[in-house]
Length: 190
Image (cartoon, rainbow, N blue to C red; front, side, top):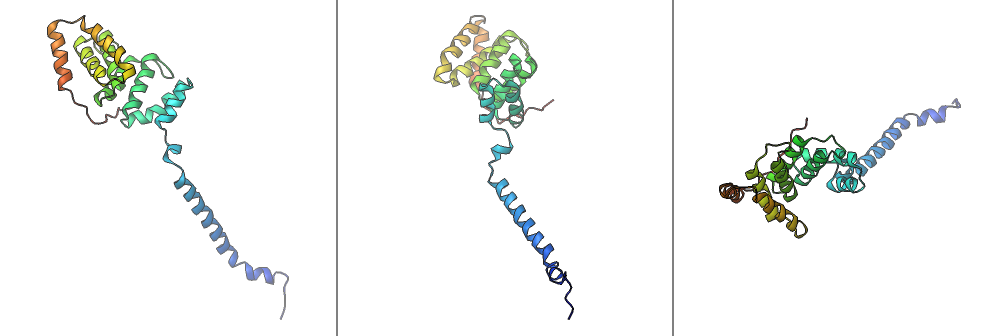
């Protein structure tokens, strides 16, 4: 019987690929388990991340985080993105896009978006100047406002009402009374 110096190693070579497969399989299983354990929020932007970026005044990051959320129809994201476009914070100032994003959120009942959309209609910024539509959105915003916002929203609603005829005020009231919130409206991204 001849004993070659590699005889012992040759005997183990067939088991080596199987061992590599076992190690690779274990590594892959661990990787998939870690990936599954990570919350989706770690992979997709969240409103909390967008609000945090906004609070840090990192408006570009806030806009980047808000864009996919707003496109999915999330009203709070749409309202904040509309605000960024209206004031040119982190995105180019664009009143038309501001009005579109506010409109998507306002139709879902987001009070802040209703308020800012009402102001855009009052001034004709990005939307046609229309005091009736302005008043409609301001009526709805005041009705849905938080306690902290209610006074401001009500004062603006009342200020716009002073520019209107009795018939215009009645029409705005009818539009507001007949309005019902709609489903999420995704905005087609440019």
